[in-house]
Image 1 (cartoon, rainbow, N blue to C red):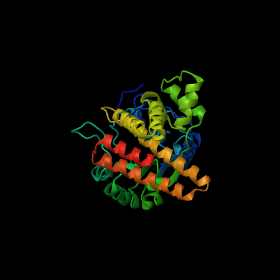
Image 2 (image 1 turned 135 degrees about the horizontal axis):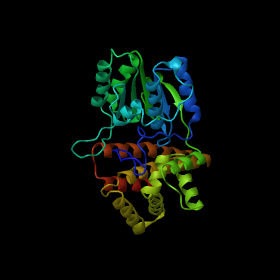
Image 3 (image 1 turned 90 degrees about the vertical axis):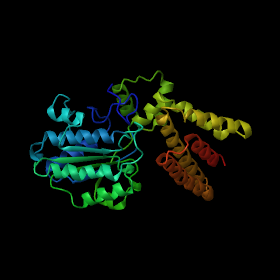
Image 4 (image 1 turned 180 degrees about the vertical axis):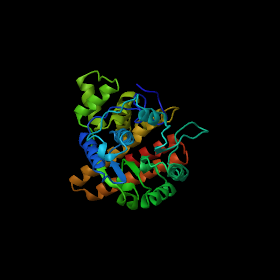
Amino acid sequence: MSELRPGVLEGAIAPVLNTVLHGHQQAEQFLAEAYRSGKSHHAILLEGPEGIGKATLAFRFANHVLSHPDPEQAPDRLADPDPASPVSRQIASGASHNLLHLTRPVDEKTGKVKSTITVDEVRKAGHFFSQTSGSGNWRIVIIDPADDLNRNGANAILKILEEPPRRALFLVLSHAPGRLLPTIRSRCLPLRLKPLSDEAMRAALDHLGFALRSDEEARAVLKIADGSVARALKIINYGGLDIIAAFDKAIDGEGPARRKAMHQLADALSGRDSDAAFNFFTEHVGDFLRQQARAAALDGRLDLANRFAGLVSAIDERFTVAGAYNLDRKQTILDVMSEIAA
């Protein structure tokens, strides 16, 4: 198990350090063959749900390219990175002059990861390319994920994508590509990664040192995780099953019992070091509302389906604003739960 880095879940291996990838053999083969052909696109959009291995694949491919700078001489498949190789050591330590990882920065005052990738972070890409312009080496930028770019940051990235430098490669990660600027999507080659199968999930969790205690626990975790290792870790390490049970109790309750359940849940998710649990809660709220909208639509209750669909967007926006402006988390949870209950 690796050191815990900012933004990395307890029990996870930071993608930059992870030498093993499960369940994406076809995507790996496509990237290796496209690169070897010499016709690889300068910007690849790695799409798929959060926590299925997109960042690990991006660093894996970056390692492959920097280890084999001549495409014609590159292997026809991606091998597990060798932690002892100079390229791997430089990438792992953040000291590679040919790789830039753009992600949400850590706030120096609070020590917490910021809510967006700002234009100041994106400007590092311009500096990165200007410093390495005469090297002749591949220069790789991983945007992780592009969903976190604020408006100015997204526009700044777009300008670079419109006129990419020579031998530049962009690996653009997205959990929800439909939310990206259409102009960014149009300049990238999409590569869709699917949620992991149960077999791949078990292998990934075993690689991280997690042995599910019983078949019943395994079925529950795998069902709710829905092919996402990150979601599985939140269930195992951050009380995901308890959060779902408390959410159901608050939604199904009535009168004083409902209000008490809501406050208990809000208190539990508003304490110190509860960011991961809170993030799991926000994901579950979105999943719950989408399921309700789907069920209402299948039942022919289109007005209700539209109301639930609208609530997904409204609550997602509420969570985003609350995070951006550091609003009271407990009150945000209570407001959201009241809207859903209504």
